[in-house]
Length: 265
Image (cartoon, rainbow, N blue to C red):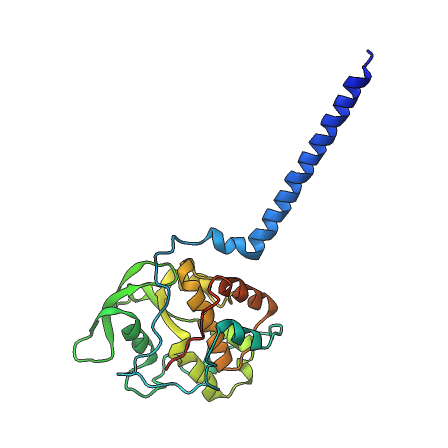
C-alpha cells in the first residue's frame, strides 16, 4: 500500500504535535509535584480564613513578665528573621521534657500556674472553680489554628479539647540551641506567655514538634502572627533556624511585609 508525500508529511506533523503535547503534560505534572512539596501542601489544607488573625500575649493587670535571654527586637519580623542564625538540627536523642523544668510552673510568681494563666488570658467568659481565682473551670475559645469556636470545660474527658501549645515546640528548640541555655532559661522558655497559646487539641497533636517548614495553621489569616511570634521567641532565646524553616517563614511574611515582631510588653 503506497502513501503520498503529503500524507506522509501530515502524519509526521501530527506525530511531532503529539510528542510536544506529551512533553508539556509531563512538565506540568513535575511542576505541580514541586509546587505541592514546596508550599502547596499548606495551601491545600487552608481553611476559609474567617478565624482570628492574632492571639493575646500579655495582660499586665494580673500577669508578670518572664525573663527571657534577651529582649525581642523591635521592628520588622522579616528583618529579625534575616538576623537569626541558620544551621542544621542538632541530634534530639538526648531530649527530655524535664530539661525545661516541671510542666506549668508558676514562673512569673503571680500565684497561678502557667496553664491556668494561658487559659485565663485566651478564653472569653471565663469561670473559675469554686473558691479559686486561678483554676479555670470553663470558657469560650475563638481558636486560632483551625479558626473554630470551642467551649472549654474542665474535666478528665473534656479538658483535652483545648491544649496549651508551645509555638516553638520544646523538642524543636532543644535541637536548635536550647540545649546550650541554662536550666533557668529553658524553664522560662517553657513558661513564657510569648511562646504559649491555647489551641484546638487535635490541631496541637497534629503539629507535634514541627517547625514552620513542615506545619502551618490551617487558618491562613493567622499565619503571619504565628510565624512572627515564632521568630520573636527564637530571637528572645537565641535559637537558630534551618534553611527550610527560614524559606517557609519568608513565604508567609511575603503576604504581610508590614508584620512586626511580637512582644510580651
